[in-house]
Amino acid sequence: MGGDSTQGAKFNLYCRRHSVKIWVDRQLVEDSSAYLDDKNWPLGTGLFETLRTENGSVQFLARHMRRVVASARILEIPVPDEDLISQAIDALLDATPHDVGRLRLSFSSQRFIATHEAYSSHDEPFKVIVSQEPSSTVGRQYKVFPYSGRLDLLNEATAAGCDEVILIDRDDRVGEGAVSNYAFRIEGQWRTPPITVGILPGVIRAVAVEKCGVVVKDLSRSEVISCEAAIVMSSLKIARPITSIDGRSLAIDSDVSDICSKLRQFATAH
Image (cartoon, rainbow, N blue to C red; front, side, top):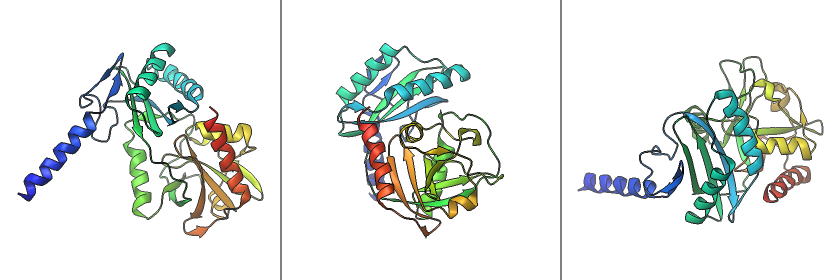
């Protein structure tokens, strides 16, 4: 009986997960099982963009589209025209409304898929650990799926009682997190690593550089583990303070609150 109950619960979960409407190529579909895996990631390989929505409004759509179009051109992945993407977004927001949502646009040589799911937005400070990478990455990185490697890093952080990792390459250069960019306050100056160290060109990171005075500069492990304060940035989280790195407490003062608040204001205005 217990086994039957467990199997029944799994079947019900599967049905609920795959009964959510998604957009495939040129239309909404009711059953996503042929297109998404059990964690709602697209099958196959391709590029993707994850965007935050609030009350039916998509944040930084133009910036996300510029990034994916530039990447698709280099990787030779087709991207539908702007009108079709807008049609897909409008249809999804109408069919699957959420106060705060995660809109994912996925592009591959086979199909265009868009999904919109609820996103739980929290403002708690992050605990972060430092992780040494076995190699160094050079040049522009792309938001590609499968995303399992990144999610595995996130799971490692969670298993250690933390929320994210700071990746350090074999040349002692500070990079990014599993799914985030960072800015560190060192000697009163906010700094973020350059794209040339092999980090993803985050949308919120770009806004922080353009509008919040964050300086792009190479950073070493010693600088980061002794920084005064830090924030974590992503399109979904926007910006949150970091309360500790490897267990060492960081300042969460008015300066930290101000930069996080400014980034949230810019996000909701776009």
